[in-house]
Amino acid sequence: MSRFDDEAKNWDNDPIHLQISNNVSKAILENTDLTNDMEAFEYGCGTGLLSFALHEHLGSITMADNSEGMLEVLNNKIKDSGIDNMHAVKLDLTDGNMPERKYDLIFTQMTLHHIPDTESILKTFHNMLHPSGYLCVADLDSEDGSFHGKDVTDVHKGFDRNRFAEKAKKAGFNDISFQTSFQLEKEIEDGSKQKFPIFLMIAKA
Image 1 (tube, rainbow, N blue to C red):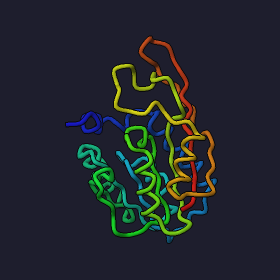
Image 2 (cartoon, rainbow, N blue to C red):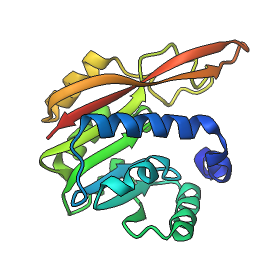
Image 3 (tube, rainbow, N blue to C red):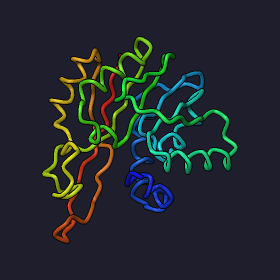
């Protein structure tokens, strides 16, 4: 069982997770032209907080994660809500598995810092989008490793925006823009509180 499987049942009880999703969804809506006929794909969806915030503005959303625990919670939420334009799939794009269909929008939140090969996942996203489709990535700005703690070594310590933009350009994206979507304040290992900016990058295929 992964730690995300273990954390899934209590994930939505943390108000920070909802605050991040609400702020990221607001920024996406303010900076893209979403329509009710667009097909969207969320990668690393977790319990679906971001998709639930956006679903009324989209035609359909495919929500992908590799955590069975998160997907179990998500499927129960979809069933209980009666929403019919969202469906969840277990999928790990880093394994080379890619949906055959193309999408108008791909969005992902606080996921890419867990993926070792950033260049590869950006290329995969580009291949999954229709021409001029949107990619929206929300993740941590560069930080000193305090966000996850010194014992967690299998993650990126956030991303430098300029370097991330270069990777996106290399993957085929254009019209790349960044903004700070949220300032997360979190207690770190020494007991103090530290602010971690979360950027939103919007780009077009």
